[in-house]
Length: 639
Image (cartoon, rainbow, N blue to C red; front, side, top):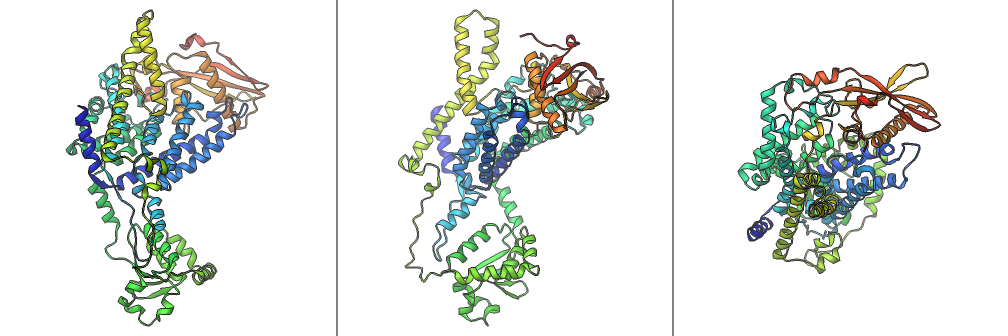
């Protein structure tokens, strides 16, 4: 079995494919990280402050978020990709360990992002759609000797993230779904969108009221998750599996308010897009004929760097860059211009045969690129054109030229390994293909063992330990297994994915909301949970998880409830300008249904259920007190 794994890995390393899909995945993955960092920064006082605006967290957290944002932006653009991928992974781990993101504000996709962030350190994702390609072209440029950085990658670089980040999640989740009552009834996709805390603002009632369709969707999801890991290794199944997965996660985005999880899963499907689709997209973007011909001095380092940069961002191939020394006499439009004058400026010839030079050439290039046309329009305006012309003239007249022929020009030695983090380490410990195969195989075996430990622990061990609390051997095994999980969960994102199972929804019959009671007795609902029971935007993602999965559950813990009522009221008091020296908030409750089988029009029934006032949150002198005279209406545990 291990030998078969080695052979498969070796084949995956030997087969080279375009790196375009890896680049697209890196960009989309980076955008998901960026939006999450923006979310964290927006809610930084709610998430990180022990008591929002009153007991503040260290300002260094806010600074680290900004540094993380910069690293994620560089990762998205592909600038020093391996280094910023390492920085991004470190930030994910640090924030998960040392901030409330670990438990109180679990985003539901942190382990997915940790796992993929770790893999991205080793994937050659900088070889496609990156600024690193441009940087290397410029770094290793030599007169009339263009160098192209590698633009391919082993096919294994596509398959491993899909297998580890998606395949293990799906298999573990599908395995747990088999033990969940409402999933076995085919209602797995139906129940969450009927629960006000989880439903999105989009009314999915027409679909939710189709019992047969919902059962088909529910059972299809279970089968899809169980066979995904096996199916992705066979080419005929990849596109159907990809389309099915994209459909499911698009449904999550539309029906639930856990959009970061939906986006985080969706971007991984870019790794399953067939290569011919990427080639077809590239061919569709390219123009059949360039709109502009630009002639530049091949012996001018500045001109060459400029051309390399412009060509890198010319996605439609709208500009044909040609060297003056090689192609000037091929263009009749330039016949009347002396050679000495041609070398002083950048010349362009458009489709009508008109010649442009200097700053006008740059304007024409920007217009031809299309995406940069607004900048070209600005440069063409009176005043701006004059200023741009002066700047151009100063740079053009001060540039240096090389007097060098092709035979005598020295070319810097190419060594792309220098671009990897800890380049010296990589060079000292460079591995052969067989050594890389063995290392990857050992890593995969380790991942499979850790995932098996996680799945078995939460499916069997901890339940057995609860049923036999006096068995010392079972208690020891359970403790050791949990100890291993704590590390695999933190550093590799390996965790149980028994999300939204029956033990979460069964008995979850009460939801809470808050309003502010003004001095005149008038109540004003906090912009948090509305009258329907839905969490309002932007209180989704981590904030929704905090309120619906930690603060308010089927068995509410009094300490947790007090903690998060304090957080929510203090946060929204500052947002709404409420003085906490003397403020009263009303705790409202409504009953909802979470049945294990289908009920007609349950979404509307749960939203229309009436609210009851069950208590108050009183702030006096910035000290909070919770009064729940009707606490017997809630299932609040005492332990």
